[in-house]
Length: 266
Ligand SMILES: Nc1ncnc2c1ncn2[C@@H]1O[C@H](COP(=O)(O)OP(=O)(O)OP(=O)(O)O)[C@@H](O)[C@H]1O
Image (cartoon, rainbow, N blue to C red; front, side, top):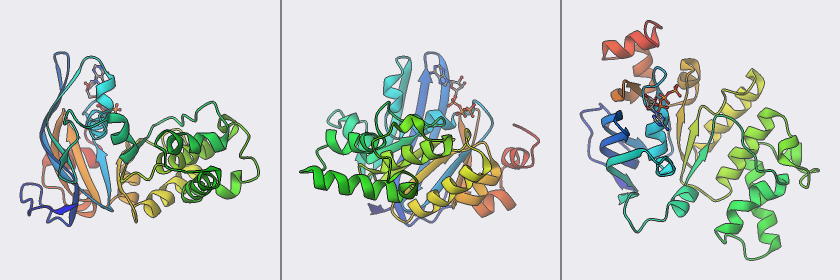
């Protein structure tokens, strides 16, 4: 981490910057999905990406761990520095990067494996445990941090797919944090969950920001207001406004942000 300069453009006088993104563009063939976006994402902070459908939130989120590499038509330009290091540098292994910048998707997607193996998978391929006892510790710790240990501790050998939707999503969060990431990307992580499961995941997000930088795409402005400290409002591929969540929701500077948060566009 390093201390970023004062970012006057986005009205954020920064603490520690985790991701410094500058002049970012994404194209899908001829579609210009992200237009000249620059943003500095803080460490140990929840940053919400909001904006109308198709505005580029998920596309920009996927740039942060090179998930767009997996889309044949996608072309990414600009500078994405994680702790000052260019994540698009040829020497960066995307698999290692994704262990450092974990991701949780909209729909819970446990592997068709046991609860234990869902968590152990990443630590195994990244060689994080020297023996079974260490792996057991990692699995238990991740499940604790994912706020699901008590519900699964007696059924670690059962399939992850047998859990409820909300439990599956917490399992996926535990899986993402088992590799000790530094950043957690969440793409509408609660959209398939009921209000009780959503509340549990939101509590977990708040807990996780003690250790990680969390970036969450959400369609729910209530959720953005509840869980995030910083908010970025996207519109038609542009980052229109970025700042403290409280300010964005009470006193936005751009009329487009105001229209969106008051429900006039979206
Ligand atoms: N794989 C893809 N191939 C081609 N175009 C894509 C692809 N993914 C997204 N797009 C286009 O890029 C633009 C941004 O899409 P993106 O999914 O990032 O928006 P979003 O804000 O996350 O939308 P939503 O809130 O509906 O999920 C849209 O015009 C979309 O149609």
